[in-house]
Image 1: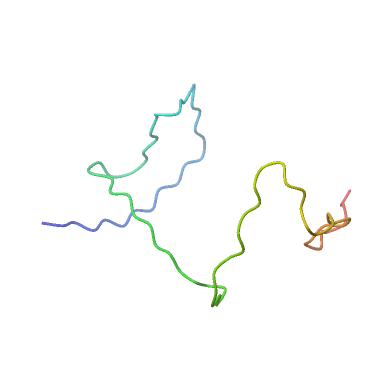
Image 2: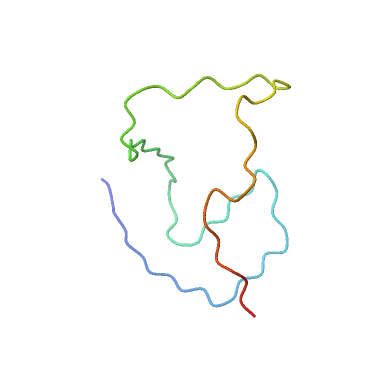
Amino acid sequence: MNFYIQQCIKIHFIKIGGITNASVLQIGSAGIVKPTAHLYNTGGFTQAAPQALKPGTPPTTPPLLAPAVPLQAPVR
């Protein structure tokens, strides 16, 4: 039997003393956590990505001299 639970949890303050690589922080319903992965082609790509460079190989394109994304000016 499968139960599908929808929850709305509001946390105003949470203090975590420590967490390690194998720790799991669960807030909400108890039970089995099943991992899932959904792959979507949202960019509409039609061919494979170019091969990655081996470590130590210089890139074939020059480095960017400006941000690739326009940034907002600092606000005071």
